[in-house]
Image 1 (cartoon, helix red, strand yellow):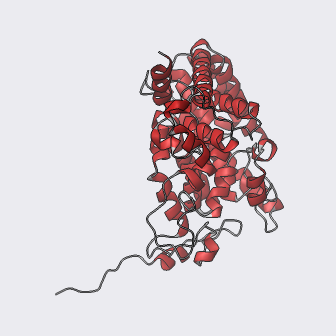
Image 2 (tube, rainbow, N blue to C red):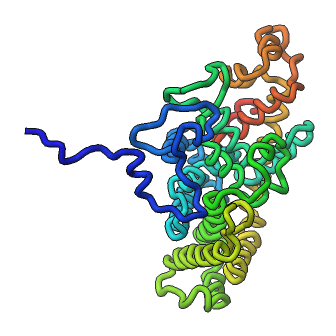
Image 3 (cartoon, rainbow, N blue to C red):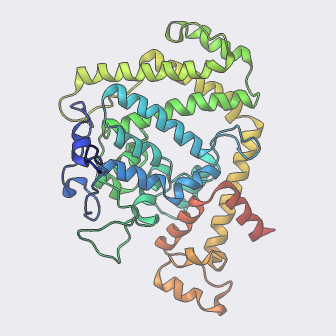
Length: 407
């Protein structure tokens, strides 16, 4: 005989059981509070931020990060990190900090998983190349955090959900909450200074963002400096003595160096997580008055920041400015530059799915086979489509496109 001893989790009961700090982003209680582009019928079992997180995890752009460079080309050495493994490490670090600070873990997860969705092939060299190309066409430049918002708001395929309103003809991407999209935009401290997209500033403002966005921002910093250091070690670009010197130079902060060399990086990561969490709670106690965006609360201590800078300098001197990375970066910039110019001059060579995204005028021109060699892209919206396509490519896809077009 069946009994009713057990039952499925109730979304509201589960969400209400989570104790958040006063400064944490609260869970939306009604569909209107989720601030999605289009209202959705709530899920019986998952709260708004879990739904955001899951949509990001299952989207194409998330999977394609596996083929995008972090520092070294991972295809040469599968032990080296790529953009996806970096994202997973940012997620782990940010969740650790969010737990310690009693921040909203589910929102933190969504932002962490999505923060690099808009990244280009070939790492920051690719991002810099696309930025210069877009600026040369009097467009708003390119930055991966702004592109991440564009990916989830426009470019990705929509979820299979029941909408309470909306226009089926309008593109809305993953239809994420405004809280998650703002976190993607503000996961880097440079968003305020570098952003040329006035619409994003208008929508999300110039403040420092939610506590969760600040947590992901600093977790990205921790992951970059520590895991890049480990990759540099595996590439034999720095010596064992230089690692020992880190512990000798920061003995008070780091304590004794582990007896096993493989534990060096995890010791540094754990130290920086604790450093940020303690400094963050001190800043919140000192300055929080009801607005999490009013200050940059989640920061390193002075000594923690000195350690971060020391590691970054080591990485720059021994890897970023080294022959292998410089050669790779130069090749990446050259490939993206040539693809951009070619696709603008001869859009016929673009995939059919991309050509379908062009303006009606250009789509009509491209159906005319007599236009070969005569049809060039000049409309800014169409140039943006080219940029979106190039940014979406993996390293291998970009290299293959270059070979098939020019060789």
